[in-house]
Structures are given as structure tokens and as C-alpha cells.
Image (cartoon, rainbow, N blue to C red):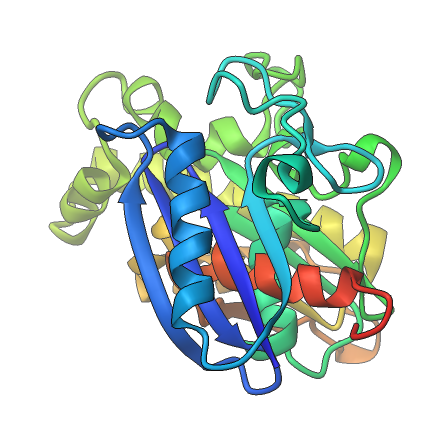
Length: 296
């Protein structure tokens, strides 16, 4: 069974043709979001190209994008300030067929739950650590979207009540604590990216170590709070910041040992996501299949 998944981001439009039974990516296409073509037309051309390349019929089409979908997952209902024209664009009407729309971080979770490191787990929390911090929650094997489809926006949880307010008004949010967008402010202007910070951290730069370990400590506080709220089988970390690998996981483990409630010595495993930059597209395809009443 084949499905198409599209991930609409601020930089790239990524499309995949996926065998939804095995998770094999049969085809993948990239187009720049702000290229010569209008991004809406670029999405339409990507879907058409993937349909033409499919050996058999395409059973479902899914699209992941930033923002909050409407209650029936037909369009993005709320995403101010980015991708002008996205809000309220009914993708089924635009593409002349049924399209299932999902938040991009939710899509990344679904890719891991169906084909990746969370396969076989019923209760999962995922955090995507990148420019900002997103996430998703899987409860009893199903994506939990919540009221107004806002569930899983874990980046806007408070980990420092005396911190600055973030874009949602939350003080001292996890997103501000570790997201790449705030690294220059957090490092007092010394670093412009998490990559630069980590290079200095590896050189035993004491200031860099302080900045990075402070961020990881707040990440551990946030993960501990999520574990206490949802009691998941597994926590998955995705996004570009996870490329830090042991420089992230080793100090995180030390902080988790301090903060995590471990009744009977039981711990919640934390794993790095399997899928990289195609996670949103693969997850969108998975969401579309799950949303079709006759094939989910």
C-alpha cells in the first residue's frame, strides 16, 4: 500500500512516496519553499510527480506543516506570521482530492511510532529540538491532539518561572532554554548557533560548558515533568540538536538521575529518533493512512 506524505517547511517542501506496510521510502522529492515557484503550486507539482512515479494506486495523501490544524485536519487553522496564505487553505479542494493535514512535530512522532524507535510502544512523548522545541504525545497508540489541536507543544512549558516570556506568553519556556533561536541571547552574544556552542564545549571552554549544561539541565526538568504527567513507555528526542549525541545524552542522563521519579527503580528510556529531515513527510503519510476509515 502506497501513500504520499508532504512536509511543508519554511525552507523546503519535502515529499515522499512510502510503502506504508514496510515504511520503505520509494521516492523522495525536494523543492525550495521560496523558490521561483509559488510554494502552493510547488506542493501541487510534488504531489503530482509522486503520483506519476507510484507503481500502484496511492491510497492516501498527508501533509504536515507548522501551526494548528482545524478539528477535522483538513487545513491549518492558526499559524500567524509564517507562510502567508497557509491559514485556512483547504488542501483537499486545492489538490482535488482528500488530504489529511497534521502539525509537523506530530508527524515526526507518528513516523517514529509506526516505523522508527517508538514502534511497538503505546505511550510515547516526543520532543523535537531545533530552532524551537516542538513535540507530540502518543496515548494508547494514538496521537493525542487535544483541544484546538494544541497538545504536544512541549516547548512552551515553563522550566524557569522567572525567565523571559516566549511567543505564547509562557515565562522561562523549554524552547527558550534550549532552542537554537535563542542561543545568541543565552550566550550573551558569544555564539550564534548551537553548533558553535558545542564546538567550544568540546574544547573545555568553561563559559560554553556553563551555557550548554544549563540548557540540558532545563531539558531534564522538562522531560521529568512530562514523564510525571503522562508516564510514557518511552521518550524520543528528535531535531537537529540531537546531532550532539553523547554531548547531549550523557549530561542529560546525569540530570535525569537527579530529577526523575523512579518508583521501584524503574526508569523511562530516552532514545534519539531514527528519522531525520524526512520525518515530517513520512509521518504525514502515516497520519493520512490512519485517518482513512477503510485502511487505517
